[in-house]
Image (tube, rainbow, N blue to C red; front, side, top):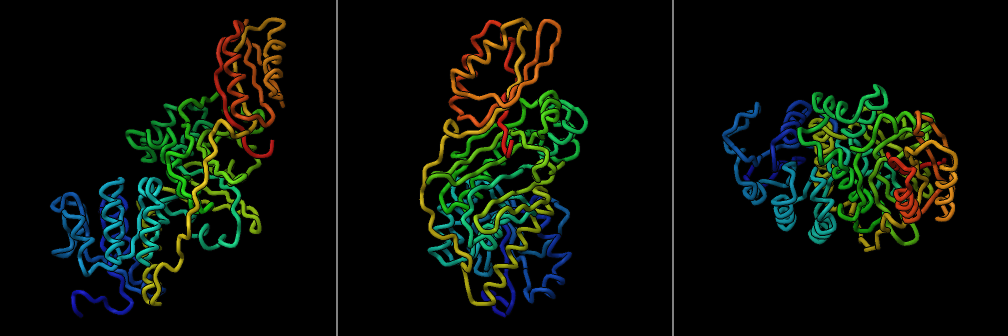
Length: 435
């Protein structure tokens, strides 16, 4: 067998990165490689691996010549049929993948930030070159969401996606709800268990979920949606009091990623939201992720699974490699293309509408509620329910509005802030689902 020619049924893989995910890919192939070959008739063989420090001990032994400190060497190696990128970061990953595609090599990536920012560019390059591009691991780790959108639901017009796309925040909110903990204590527990990074900003401020939603919305609606198009709020301001009051009203709180295709525009937002406790997503606990999709003929479809971690992500990467190996054996490439992406405007958050939960503390004396209610009425915001809890000379007022345009609610909040009887507006949380 010549160095430039693969054995029949063999896919020779160049791996960019051998950290948590890359190492798990190597272990998976070494552990289950024979079973994969038995089931599929395909051999997946890693022939080159790019790492930042080739001399570093990483608990995995490679044959001489496999490891290199130059990622470009892996892409250029004529023995490499497919490049699997698990190094993360936008650059040099973007340049390396585009180079691989130009060389006619298929590509697998787990890089959500790259695809969320440059997905349309990479999709177009793969289409021009006629190579396979697979990115299941970029959203949801081991949770299969991208191929179902592209294949199983391909006959449908998808009107909306709702997702719990970040396991760290879901774990934190689960502990806050179940144990009555505050945010900081729940975060510390998540860090101790390895669900949260030392710097949790990417997760708790919604960046991770926004990047994933951008990818899913692009695929579902065939329109380019980038991470910067997604409105984003995190969970730092959620309190045990919000969770307790929400439970009394029949709600659970989740960090939701929501995308809708409405009136020729795309709506994409990530923020904490109250869900009716009977909604399927309200039952998703701990570090699990879930995606809820509504198609015009398939109806409502939901998938649930572990959304992060080396092993679940490696599982998705290897599944994509198997798919590419099958395509090569059949003599086809780009079997499931990305199609034409038609640019569409993104609806600004100010034009979206939802019910709102509002918690405020006010002076407890006659006439206070009448002043508050008059502001809501003058701004055209209808109140669905109200609960008052007296605390000495002050009272907590919990309101839920009917569906309200965001700009209307912002005008209400601005006017409430001017009242001399208002102590504080403690929380404002959007409500989704049938209220």
